[in-house]
Amino acid sequence: MSLPYSVQAPSDFVDRHPERIDQWKNLVRTDPRRAVRVLTLSGVNSETIEGDTPVDTQYVIAQLRIVSKEAKGDHWKALVNAGVIGALCKCALNFQAAVMLREDTGVPRAEVENVAKQMFASYFHPLEIICNAVVSGSLPPTATEKKIVEEMKKYWSSIMQRVWSEPGYTLEPTPREVRVIERVVIAQILVRLSLFDPSFYEIILKPSDLTLAVLFRYWMHSTAVADSRLNLMVLLPLLEPPYPQHLKEYFEQHPPPDMHALLPRILLGASKTAGSEKKKRTPGQAADAILSATASHLEKLGLEEVTYEYNFFHALLNHSEKENRAFVRAAFKSSSLWAANAQVMRRSAAAKSQLGDGVYMGALMTYSTVIHVVEQDGKEFIDALVSSWMSTGLFDAVEDTVDVLMKAPRGPMLLTSIIAALDRWIPQLSAKTRRLMRSQLPRPRLIKSLLAPGFIRGEEDRERLDNDYADLVARGMGSSPQNSMWTQGAWQMLEQVSSKVEEPGDCARRGCEKKVDAEGRPEQACHMCKITKYCSIGCLEKDMAEHGHICGWVHFLEDIRKQTATKEESAPASEGEVSRQLGGLTLSDLD
Image (tube, rainbow, N blue to C red; front, side, top):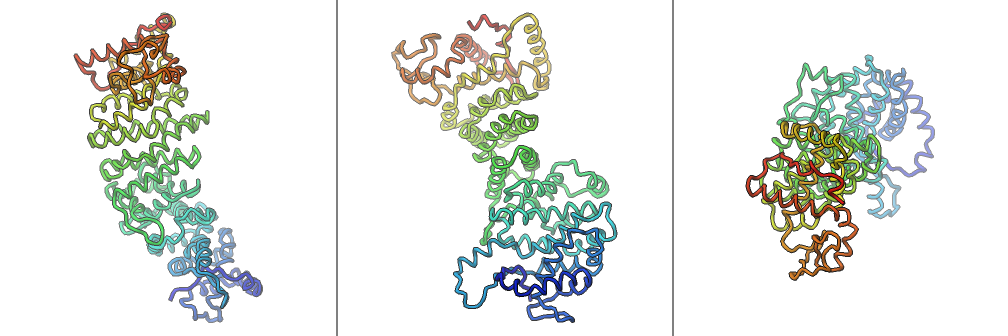
């Protein structure tokens, strides 16, 4: 019979028994075997040889929570020698939660349930005590820590089975201080046990063990730095070494399972919904849930934590290319993921710090990384990815953060690869997605920001551009990320994409779906360049601030468009080729 433990008792119950508090404060420290016997009672009517009953359990647990924080002390060592670890593990396996009420109180059921939701999971406090002990234990480990490890090995997988099967309210977001602590305790115990003895990983890497699934589920439901990072401290090195030093040495002699065996055991954590029903998810639903969790973390966590999230996402994506294509394909379609990614670009750029710059590149690389992946899946998924990018504001995010992008070591190179992919994919896009892309173009302000660094102010600039062009011709995509041709390639490709998605007679203002008057009224064209045309005077006036960024360059850009179109008709450009149209552009050409 299971022992009721997690009790929400009337406050006057404890107040009326201060003598028991004092009694067990003394006994836990002076008679550890008696305390352990209380923990091993097997039923509500059982008692020890001293006459202690299950009611005493809550007092023993309360004192163990205190003593375990001083695990180097003699009191804790005596408890370990008396068998407290095995007893606590059995408590974690058997304790049940209960809300205790005085008779005839008439408390509504809803209120009782609300109280239950505020309580810790029934297995939490025994694990909390063990966590206190291993965190405050000795390194290098003494005989006490080694004994804890050996005892934990006996019960660990069984405890993980219970935690997996009975999550209770642990996956809920509130109350936050309760739920976050519940979601970190297992990872924290595991990290410390592996420091005491790396061979503890033999337990969690057994095919039947559910630790990795539990930790992945906790990561998915994390709401704070602690529960996100601590669970990733275990999961991320397994997916993407390097390992911590103590595990590196261990895994050199005992290699972990290959990813074909390991990844499904991690992703099992996404296989069920939270809540009492715990419905089983399909692979596609599980992938969507993982991506939703990733997006939520990118939006809510600080920039330092976002770095870990990106590392984890890219590790999952990398291994899923072969092992879990459902996840990869769901990523292409995930509007929440790409919206969060665009938000991170803005947030990291605004930080104006070294950390922010690094996170910014992580966001930009998230766009570029999926390019080669999606091309393996063909037209349907290319269309889905482009639709996701356009609907979540890729160009808006780039335009808002272009100053940071231009200064980043690989920023222009990555941007060029992204826009070149869009250009390459246009023939495969549906009419709906082409219209969506058209609604995001043109980008005069972005074009100006990319074009301006290519001004030739003298022979030194011309020589640099000539050398950069020669390097690009010789090395192609292997050219240095600092090559100025990447910036030129970015604006040229962007202009090319704009021209390809335009329809004859389109209004020049971004977002307008109307056509220019067939009669070509002069008053509906820009009065300065005479080339840019609008559907109405209203659109012209609304667009002047935007168009003004490139008004003086429109003739030049129009020539570039024509030359590019001619070149493509005669010989389509090979992948990665960047034309040299800006090589001879000087400031006087823009007057």
